[in-house]
Length: 356
Image (tube, rainbow, N blue to C red; front, side, top):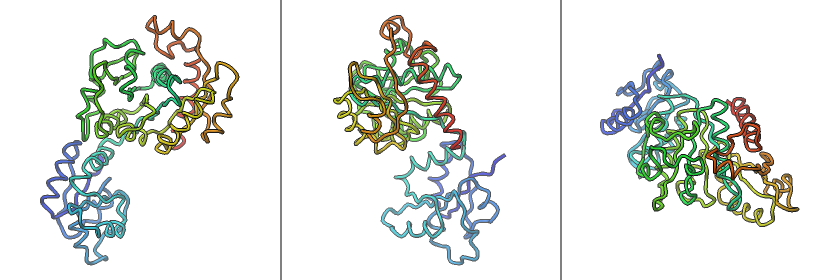
């Protein structure tokens, strides 16, 4: 049995807020109201929520248990700029103010309460319209399921027509994005997992064909966090334009794939995508598509865009006919798409294991 989260405060209003946040993630914390925290629980707790009232009251350094990782200094006075100095002195990993920082704190509590390894999160963007980003996103998800990986596919392009159509599952029951636009805070990963439609074994959250509804960043943050907590792989099909929700998604990617045909016009368009979305992705790589005629090679695309090359993805013969039969992208293990996705997933999975 692991040690409990430690709350160290004498501020009853702050304590009430922190207890409610802990209850939201199923955590049962230990509460210490004394002037100084007991050394044992202070050192063993996976996370310490230190009220700023106790940081202010720290008068005798000899009575303080000492620095440790996993301390969050929590205050309620936004106008008190000296709280950051106290956080630095105490070695706090983060200084937060309630209620404004409650979403961040809930996620931090959830990480401690349910510390399972988060899903590998891969986003796919088109360097230009029609580059094949949605096709690649679906193929990655379908290939991952065939490998035995728990996989969730998030359709993040409200104007794309719906990935459920591309996967032939538009009649499947279950929520689409409009049902989740009001999501906020911690969303139950289990509830999301059980409610999402399945398409060829993929857990799918798509858009419907109703009028486009703006997706708030908070909704994207809640849904993506719930999907990632389930482990496995999360694939996001992303638009080229960056709004609030897309910015949140880009910041959480472990890997971004920019699909670019080897054409001058596509290169110019892709440079704009790199300038807007690329700066928000920690690891963005180029998936080169060969041009219909003489054009830019895969290596040239990577060099001109200043990005590493994830690989070259040729066209797959018969892909349109397969879709008409109801076969999703990547359905044929020996096909071009499936083999590309298999190689890519093997490589990034190995990299993730080494990094862990």
